[in-house]
Each structure stands twice: as C-alpha cells, then as structure tokens.
Image (cartoon, rainbow, N blue to C red; front, side):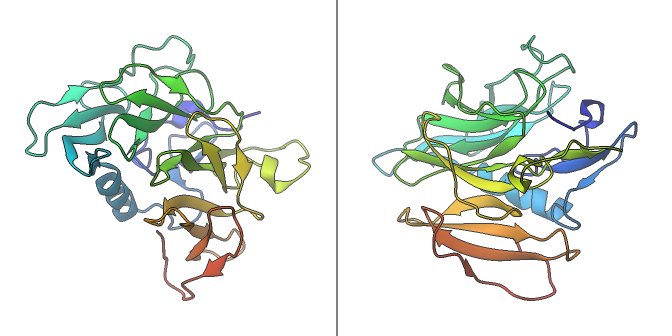
Length: 261
C-alpha cells in the first residue's frame, strides 16, 4: 500500500534526483522527508549531475545532454539536447499515459548508461507508485524494471553497465493510522539502497538498516558512496561508502553539518 497523497505531487522538490518527500494530507505543502535533506541547492546539484553528456563504449561522447523539464508539460518530462543547447528532443510525454488515474505522469531521475545507448529514469506513468524504467537514447523501447507498492528511484548505472543501484522507500504521507509493519523495510517512509541487474532481475537489498539513499558508483565499480540520514537526529546527513555487495560500510563524514553525496 502506498501512503502518498498524489494530489500534492506538483511541488518544487519534485525535481530530478530529489524524489523523496512527505506531503500533508489535504494540503499542497511539500517538504523533505528528512529535514534539510533536499534543499534547493541539493536539487540543483542533482540536476547538474544527471544532465551530464553520455559517453559511448569507446570513451567518446554521444553529444547529448539529458535533463528533466516542465516545458510544454504539466509535470516533468525527459529531454536531450546538444551541449550548446540546440536541437532539444522530448523523449517522454506526461500526457501520453492512461494508466495513471491521478493525472499527468512525472518522468525524471534520468541517468545515462555508460555506453550512452540507454537512459534509466523514474516515473509514475503506470500507476500510483514511482518505479524505475529504461529507454533507448531516442526514447523508444521503454522497459519497466521495478514493480513495488513502495516508491523507487535514483537509479545509478554501474560503470560496466550490467547493474543499477537505486533507492527504495523514503516517500510517504502523514496519516492518522498506519498498518502494523513487519519491518522498517516495508515502511514507505524509510529509504534503503538496492541493487539489480540492468534488466531489472535479481533485486537485492544492500542496506541492512534504513536511512540510506542516493547511491553513487566508484569508477571501478567496486564501491558505492551514499547518504545516510537519521530519523532520530534532525538535520543529520552523513556520507558513507560500502562494497558493491553491501559489506564493509565505512562512515566518511561526522559533523553537525548536512553532508550528502
């Protein structure tokens, strides 16, 4: 079951790489799930990172920058553009999906595959929850990789293009009574980092405790950096690294500031 109030979707924090939020029931007020986590500067940084040019397998750039935009849309759609800003091409259409009963779909969190042939992205185009999809660089051959009642997003390709790390959870609505959950892994408000094959198979949890999000691969594909947030300590975000199998978690930052990958 998803506890989010879809009517509160259009908000400034719903920008690329800033998926997770809490919405007050019946109100059009959006804010970060964890205090201070997704300030506007964070959203801007995430947009810049995800809008980098895609590299081909030969190490050359394919000449296109991917970004999410609300131009000509009621929600976010994914575009590609030349590095000089010319020849924008719209790859997704928020009005083109009939499976979402709550209105236009949001397509964002775009991430190039290492060879520049595909984009992974986050969307609610097929229903209530946000899931991870892939498509070809021209917008064709859209494939759904995840299927969960809990929101999933922030896809990150491994350097060899065979795996995708992502965040599950961290988006919820404040409700009067929430069903009893067996574990925090079933709580839509608590983010965990997962790993799957590039085709969506073999999804495994890398996080052993909640609060992990925003995975970033090391260049050799052996490690993942991520942000750890605490529900018990306000404004407490720290940076960790772990092996690609989830082992050997090491904390890199430890201060009263807000740190994020």
